[in-house]
Amino acid sequence: MKLSYYSSRDEACKSPFGAVKAGQEVRFAIYPARHVGVIDARLWVRRDGEEAAAYPMKWSGYDGATDLYTIVYTPEEPGLYWYYFTVKSKAGERFISRGYGGEGEPDSVLHSPFQMTVYDGSYPIAGWFGEGITYNIFPDRFARTEAPPKEGWRSPRVIHDNWEDMPVYWPNEQGEILNNDFFGGSLRGVISRLDYLQSLSVRTLYFNPMFEAYSNHRYDTGDYKRIDPMIGNEEDFQLLCREAAKRGMRVILDGVFSHTGYDSRYFNARGNYDELGAHQSQDSPYYEWFNFSKWPDHYSSWWGIYTLPETNEMNEKYLEYIVEGEDSVIRRWLRLGASGWRLDVADELPDEFIERLAAAARKEKPDALIVGEVWEDASNKVSYSRRRRYFQGGELDSVMNYPLRDGILAFLNGDGAENFAEKMECLRENYPREVFYNLMNIIGTHDTARAITVLGSNALWDADKHTQANAVLEGEARERAKRRLKMAAVIQFCMPGSPTIYYGDEAGMQGYGDPLNRRTFPWGHEDQELLDFYRTLCAARDQSEVLRKGELQFLTAEGGHLVFARSLGGRQMIVAVNRDEQEYHFRIPQVYAVDVLTGSPYWEELSKGAYIDMQPESVLLLRCGGDLSE
Image 1 (cartoon, one colour):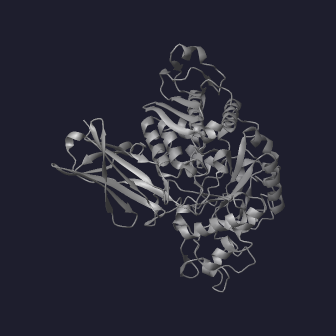
Image 2: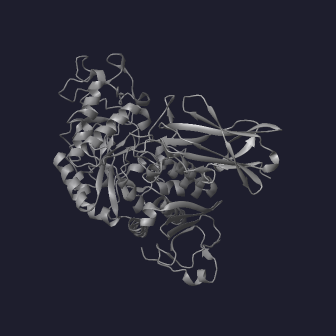
Image 3: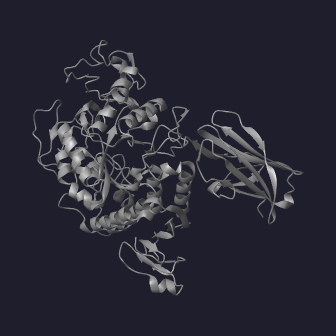
């Protein structure tokens, strides 16, 4: 018998659910068993960095076989708040603190306190992002109109004439991977494929870096105010934004501000720029951007990689150039047509820098989007021994949802569905609702192996690059990986937030880690069956207000079976996933349902109270209820 009941996810215990606005009343209730004989109950609250304070709870009557103790608490300031309860009886004092699933049970030892995220409710989130589908483009590898010339570039570049070549993945004679082989993907190439992207119902184009740089990935920025000439120019960018807007699409850019390039206008260690760089002279206008321990060759660099000198983000000259000047990098590209920024390694950017960046972006464009690259639960992230405040107001509108990616792929590779559901419920509880519905929902990025490869292979993760480069899923192994990818995509597209396609996943692209996950898009060689599936799924997501805005509820999450619902105004969509190799008998309470992916109706079976038989390794996306038109 439970000695007490408290669940942070039950509104009978904590109301409102999840994160709350500063100044909003929160009602807490615990339900100790009556036979325990509680004589005192207290709520303990500790704001991050402060001491815990006790608040006496009021006995509020009986609830069946339990007593009811309640209290109303109002957090006045944004921040992370940690709380637990103590109950005292003749047997002594016990703690109620966090256990699995947000439930608490009396214990003589204080375990993890419950988290309550408190945020500034007056700061508006750019919620348009979560409404639509996002397509992630790696500029050099998505589309080109012609092979670029081999000469005339600022730095040495190896040009692939053949679009279908393998990227260079082997170190050179000095043991260094230069990442300076290029295929010539361009903005004009993207423009030529906008109709293709429209066929996937895409609403946001997210580009990995497109500014001039030494490398093909362009995370070593050479000039923040110049499109890499191999990609195009400023006029091409403006044309892309205009043509995308005609199709209902927006453009967001990748901002790499924690470091620049060794070969950049600002550092200029190779002397490829006319301007005096910090590596060349301490009189450089950019010298204060960088942290030298011994000029010129001893400086802070990102993860110790010498080609990525770290910036001093809070230097006023740097802030003026990147963030706050009238022609700052942030404001300039928004003015030229972008709708937002994704911040590379956001956990390495100071909170104040992000706040000032977000304010400058909103000054230029009131609904500008700021997305952070954070790989964990971003609500309680600690980096460099400091708690981050991304969602407390004034910083991020969204983050990349790596916990979703990790949870989906782990589940489809054998982990229990209950672990996926718990991971998602933790985010739903910890994030402000506006943020949770605005997340960048990924299953693959330029930093991860292709999703289909993760789902189809488990033998070569420790192999050398040459072995991995030549590994291809074929036959039944590929078909099984495709079945799993379809399941992954349906989960991804039906969770709150913006489902984000890493270019080529919809076409069946394979590949282990960098750069094998960055091969060129296989135009003319797409997996047509998989592409058709994605188009159907994208249309279903785009056309369904329930999937865009509906409440989330997990109905079944156990072993190889995952069932969850999205509900809005009496309408409901249900996702059912059977990962197992055996049939799964699944029942829903509604009388009518149709699988929107295949058009198959389930009216007669459900009207008789029968179960739906799911095939092994299959997924259903059911539109349920009496009104099946959306």
